Length: 265
Image (tube, rainbow, N blue to C red; front, side, top):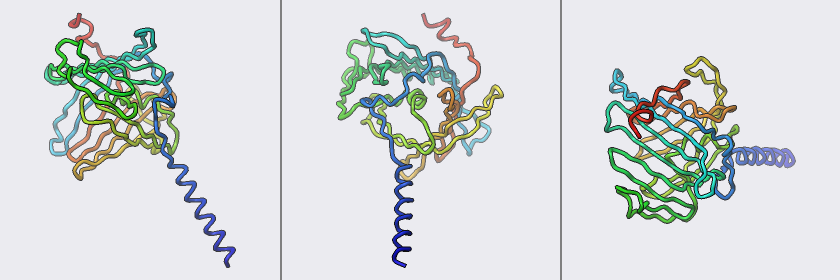
């Protein structure tokens, strides 16, 4: 009987250890260079972003997001230069974002965004972030925050997810920071499985499902991302929150960017 009990306990412990091992959290650190930077493909991507609220089922709030990735050289160093344009139903919802990140590990170097006509620009490195004092009309020139460890740019979450070494059962802890706000914080993202996604151009794409959950004042927020296994592209995002849903869907063809082509010289 003792032998049977001992065997049972051993099997139970083995099972628990297996679960713990499978749930081991992979912390994404700059120094480890675990992001697959070669997977981040230069080029223009466009997303249809829209909100649906159960209380107003006939209304649709939507935007067109453009994210343009380029590989460049700045001060003798290879970088990713990423430009974003967010178009809404009126000019007040327009947002322009420009970010520079070191190519070898995606360390943020510079970040600027114009929201509601106001510019915020920052110089960024592994030890801290501060307002770019040489940028004209920068409303955040006096801003300064020291880091106790390097962090990633939360405005580039899509690009960061596309470089993760995704696999079944993995949990990633990413130290994200939203420039100009509180402090960096780790967010856990779990690969919950995979799914065949039917895209707008009629393709079926095998995707990893990446999920994160958070709470704010007792309310639950859930984000799920569909990232293609073969191309490492974020094709869809679904966000659920107490009063509605937000979706991002990658468009299969590019709509003309009139602002970039004709108006901005």
